[in-house]
Length: 605
Image (cartoon, rainbow, N blue to C red):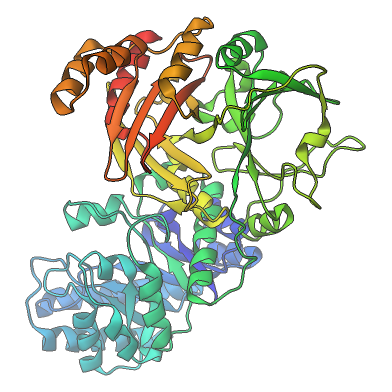
C-alpha cells in the first residue's frame, strides 16, 4: 500500500520535511496548515516541489470546530472553508480533514452535525474536495469513531466520509472490530500512531507522547487488520505528535517512521521482508580508546588475557571464558565517532563503540537490515580479511553480524593472529548483557530498530531515579537471554556519567570474582552503608553474608524467578564493567538498585 506521513511528525521547515519524507521512501504527505502558513513557498510552489520529489499531497488539515454550531457561526465556517478549498486546489490536495468539534458553542445534536457536515461536503464537492470527518478522543460531543461514523452515515453525502486515527480509537479503549463493518469506500483516510500507556489527560497524551507504530503499547496492527477487512485501500499515513521528533533531525526521523510502516505492513501481511535472523549470542564487544593502558589494566584485573592481535589494524583481542573484548586504538572514522551518546568522539576517552552479534545467517541478517532502511556500512577490508558485515544502530553503534567457529561461515577470528603461549581462562564467564546509553532523541527509534531489524523482544519501559532526574530504560533481548541489551537514556545531557555504557560479565560466583578483581588491584564502586542497612531490613542474611556484600559493594535483588547479585567497577572513560550472578532464572537487571549505583557513580567521578 502507499505510505504517507504528516508534516507535523517531522522537524524543520516545510521544505526540509518534504525532502526528508521523500528520501525515506514515503509516497505522500499530510500537510498541516501551520507548515504551509510558515513557508515562503506559494501553494503552487509547494505542489511543484512535492511533484519533483515524487510525493502526493494526500491530506490537508486547516479546519476545526465546524459542526453542530449555531447558524451564524456555521456561516462563518463555510466562508472560511471556501477559502481553504481554494488553497487546496492550488496545492493539488483533494481530501480535507475535519475533526469533531471541541468548541464550547457546539451542541449535542447529531442531526444538526450531520446536516452541517452535508452542507460542508456540498461546498467541498464544488472544488473537487472530499471531507474526512474524524472523532477526536477529547471531542466535546463526538469522541469515538463509531459515533463519527453514525453522523457520516446519517448525512449520506458522497463527498463526506470518515477518517480513522489509531490513537483516538485505541486511547479510549474502543473496540476496533466494528470498523470492519464500515464500507471501505467511506473510509476516506487512515492515520496511524502508537503511544505508551500512561495515566494522563488524553489531550496532553495525544499532543506530546505519540510514537510511530511498534514503539508504544497500542495494538496498531490489530486495528489495521479491521480497517483492511472493511476494504480500505488508501494510504497508510503516520500522524505523530511528539516533542522529541519535533526537535530531532528530520532525515533520521523520517527513516524511523518509514521503517515502522514497513514492519507494520509485514505484521499484517501486506508486504514481505527478508525474515528476521535472531542473533544467538554476543561474539565480542569493541572498545575504542586513544590510550589503551587504563582499559587493558582493568581487563587484566578482571581476569582477561590478551590472546590475539589483528593482522592489519591496531586492535587486540582480550578473552576470559566465553567473553571477548576488542581494544581498538586506531582512529574512529565511522558513525559512532560522530553520533555517540553526548555527541562526543572517541578522542573523549574509552567508549563501547561496536558489538559483534553471533548470527546463524549473517548474510540474511544483512538483507533484513537493508530492507528496513539500515544499509550495511562500508568497511576498509584488506586482502584475506573475513567478509564481515556491519550495520549502524540509530545511536551510531556498529553492530557486526558475524560467526565464531561455525562450519561453512566466515569466522571473524580469522583476521586475528594468536599470541604464542597465552590462553584465556575457561571458567564460565560470558557477556551477560550490554547496556547501551542512547542519545535522548534516538531512544524510541533504537527500541524499534533492535526489535524490527534484529528480531529481539522488547520488554516494558522502566523509569529509574537518578540524582539529577529520571533515567529511562527498556531492554531488548532474545527469548533465551543469549543476547540482552538494556537501552537507556540519561537524565543529564551534559553529564558523562549519564552517558557511560557498560559490559556486564556473567559469572557463576560473583563474590569470588569480585575478590579476585580487588586482589589484582581493581577498584570496585563503593556502595553507601545505608543501602546495606535497608537490605538487612528487607531480606534475611547471615551476618557473614551481609558483611561480604558490604565489603565488596555487592548489590542484591530478587524476582519471582530467582536472585541477582552484582557489583560494578570504577568507570574508565565512558565505560565500566559489571559482574553479575543470576540464580534460579532471574530475568531482570537489578533495576531496583540502579538509583544507588547511579548516585555512587556521581560521587566517585
